Image (cartoon, rainbow, N blue to C red; front, side):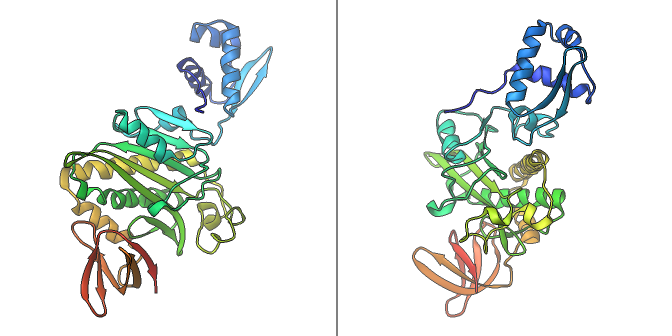
Length: 330
């Protein structure tokens, strides 16, 4: 069940407390500014505390905001977000959810506009490509974004590459980690999987009606938090840096980079995405195995082409193109 979120008046009170910059604000002054009773102010302060805000209270001094929780709450995501559309509409936030992609697909099918965002602090049935599960405990970024690009269905796979380049750029900027991309949608650091992307579409005739762009990034997980079978394969920002990162600025950076890449795609097509992907590519020039459509192919990964297909030079069959598949290193 969806948890009720703080209403607009609660958000307005939070804005007053933030503008106070950690100073004491009397209940009387807040009551006057908010044009509500002091009892109502007290109730809204209680609502913020229930969301995890640390607010000191004193009968004589009033209220003082001491700490903002590291939770991806809608009003915190929007506070300071430098985008025009993405993240500016409805943001649905859940403490726990089976899958953000499933929720977002239902919203998109019901007509939710482009830019609608679904965020979960934890997923109980997170989904990866080809029906795989995605380990999604508290401490990561798990989101699904609804977009409605004017594209044909065969162009849809490009958005996994577009998203990967945007996320890699944002994470590099914020963490200074050498984030790389393994085709088609894995985010890696030192060979360990840091995040993944799952795009799903709804079609109408020969056009894409909507696309759900799902993203999972391991942020503040420790190595011991991963199940034993994932520890050799997965990593996190915390594991790589030894630091705990605030997820809010990371998320804002991701949304800003995505909107910039999306707008560029609409103006100029796939060529700029391909150039950025080449800068982040993990596998170019390496020997890889590609499993696709029930067959296995081994060769040198050359590049992605103008359609986003992986180009492989296979020992016996020459140059081949792959629309989708699983890649592993030889």
